[in-house]
Amino acid sequence: MLGEPVSDAGQELLMDARTELPFFVMQTHSGWMVRADGTVYGPYSCSGTALAEAVDEAQAAGLFGFASVVLLRPAIGQPYAVRWLYGHDPYPPI
Image (cartoon, rainbow, N blue to C red; front, side, top):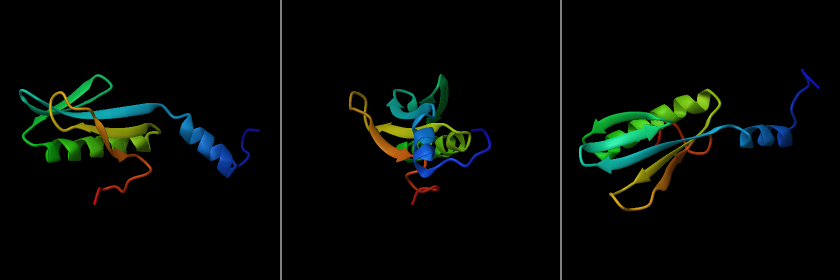
């Protein structure tokens, strides 16, 4: 019912139902870039700066209800790896 508290199990279900929003950090020929939902950030001179920007943006998206995740591709042609997950990893990152 509307207005009733949500149980712990119900909260987990709501978290699982959030819209996923991945932030991709990648090296390109013009520098490091961050891409998310059609938006491109950068270029940045190093992966650390691009990663920090991606985490900042993912944190903001998480506060708006998105299940945001930051994925890093360390070099062109390599697979992406999860580097930060909203609600799981600390913010700001250690």
